[in-house]
Structures are given as C-alpha cells and as structure tokens.
Image 1 (tube, rainbow, N blue to C red):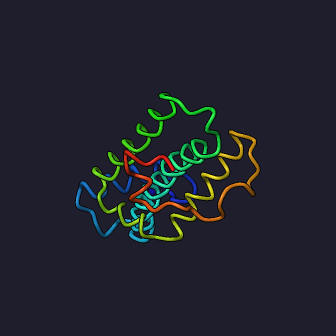
Image 2: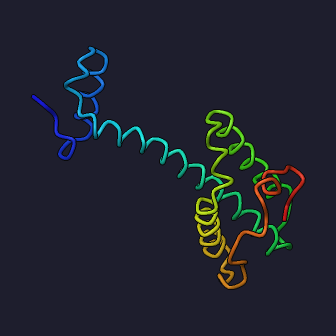
Length: 144
C-alpha cells in the first residue's frame, strides 16, 4: 500500500527510503522527495539563525544592562559562539548565511524580540539593524 505524503509523512518517508534502498527509483515520489531534501537545508539555516539570535540577544543584554555583566554572562556568550562555530564546521555551506542580508535581518529581529522579552527594555531602544558584522559577533574578544 502506498503511503500518502499529505496524510502520513512519516509513513511516506519510510516508504521512500525503502524504495531508494531497494533501487526502485521509478516508484519514488520524486517531487516530494526533492522538496523534503530542500527543506533539510532550510531547516539547517533556521537552526543557525536561531542560534545567532540567541547570541545577539546576549550581546544586546551585555550592552544595555552593564550592571548585570559578569563571568557567567561572558561564559554564556562564548558558549553560544562555540556552538555556532561547531555548526559551521559540521555544515560549512551555512557560512553563506552570514552574507545573506535577509537571513541576518531575521536573526536580528528574533534577537530583539528575545532581548525585549527577557529584559523589559523597549524595542525602540535597540537599533533597527544589527550594528555589528559577523566577524565582530563571532570574535571571542568582542562584547558589543
């Protein structure tokens, strides 16, 4: 029985994997398989944007809440950088996201949302666009 992409994606995916492994390429749902493969790349980009948003949020808090700065905040920022670096080592093509202005704007908007929510600071106090470039954000010596 053929699994339906629209009704049960898990059963569909398992069936497509079985067809691939058994070499029954003519039976594949090629269009949906291609879409799912493309979605994997988009998912990786979203995950990187989420990680970057968290890092940017911590940098915003560092800049806008100097009375709370401390070793634990610094360690958190460095840990976030390390996780992004690890992701980039595992998937080097994600480095291109850093040059994509739309990707960067999305990460920045998410960072402002997080920072405003976590600090109670008004959105208007944060810059509309990220004032830092990727090299600065990822630098172990940079804190805004």
